[in-house]
Image (cartoon, rainbow, N blue to C red):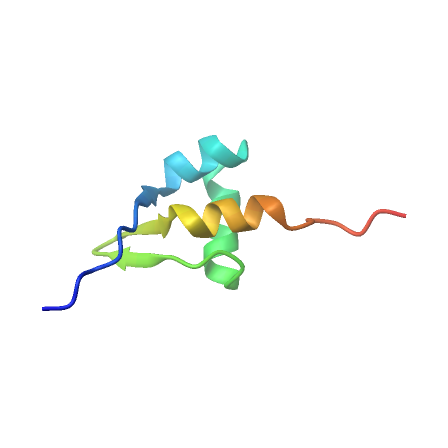
Length: 63
């Protein structure tokens, strides 16, 4: 059997706290496709690596 990668999933509330935004902002990012997520029933889980990558890329073009 192939080994599964060690992926840690975060709730929308945890992502919002890490990114210091509202939960609604996280839902908008998920629905727009900017933040990948997996749906479990009625809730979403976001891979921690996706949150890290999203926080490292520039958000706005200033200048």
